[in-house]
Amino acid sequence: MADIDEIDRRLWEAFTDSSRMVTRHVDRELRAELGVISDDVVILEGVLAAHPDGARMSDLAHRLAAEPRHATYRIARLEERGLIARQADTDDGRVIRVHVTADTNAFFALCRARLDELIALYLTDLVPFDGRRDLVDLLTGVVDGYRHHFATPASDHPDHPDTKEHP
Image (cartoon, rainbow, N blue to C red; front, side):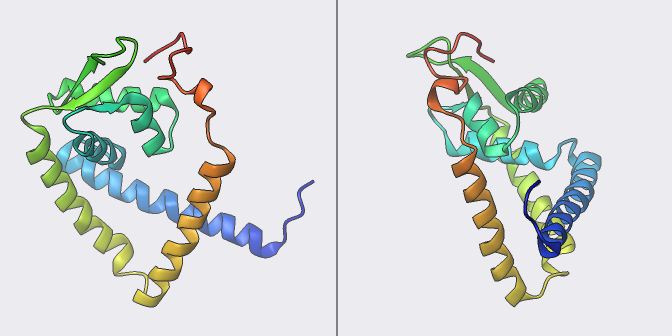
C-alpha cells in the first residue's frame, strides 16, 4: 500500500473536486451558449497556434491530456460544424493534420471571450490574488511531473512512422 498521509488525501480530494466542479459548470455554460465544451476551445487554440502547418491529431490529444479517441471525437464534432478541417500530412500521408477554416478565428474569439468570463466567475472571483499565484505554481508542478513521469514513448506515439494504427 502507498504511504500517503491525511494531507495527501485532502489534496487529492480538493484537486479532483475543484477540477470536476469548475469544468462541469464551465462546460455546461459553453455548451448551452456556443455548442462546445472547454476541450473544444483547447483544440481550436492548438489548431490556430499550429497554423499554417496544421496540428497533428496526437499533439491535440496531448494538449488535452486525453485519450486519442476523445480528441478524435471532439475534433470530428468541430469539423462537422466547419470550424476545422482534417487533412493528410503532405510529407507523410499516414499523419493527419488539423487545419483552420474560414470560421475558426471568429468562433475561437467568441469562445475565448466567454471562457474568460467564466474563469472570472468560477475562479478569479473566488480565490484571493495571492493564493492564485501559489495555486498556479502548485498545479503547474503537478502537470509537469505527470507529463514527465507518464509521458508516452515516441515509438508509441500515434503519429510515429512505425505505428500502424492512425486516427
